[in-house]
Image 1 (cartoon, rainbow, N blue to C red):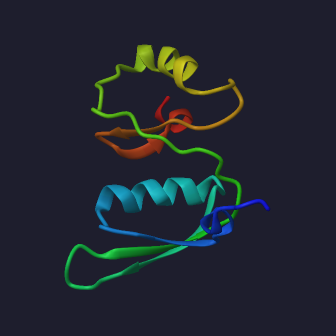
Image 2 (cartoon, rainbow, N blue to C red):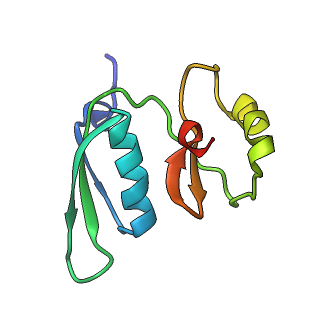
Length: 105
């Protein structure tokens, strides 16, 4: 008998706590089609987000702590982080907002 994870096929998830950075990150992910719509629930505490998944997201990671990367070193970071030149996105936090690596150029 094979035991499978029940959450592996989940199409809705709950994210808490909610912050402006998370909302802007999810907006960029939705723009690229990795996730579906999301709804912000205000519970007068930290807030919650209910997000619909599309099944396109394989892996999502974070680099902690946040590093200061100049524009000339951006290509080097992409080569180290992304599996292929045409596959995946690096999402950056800049003074102009949160954007992907193609938009930051």
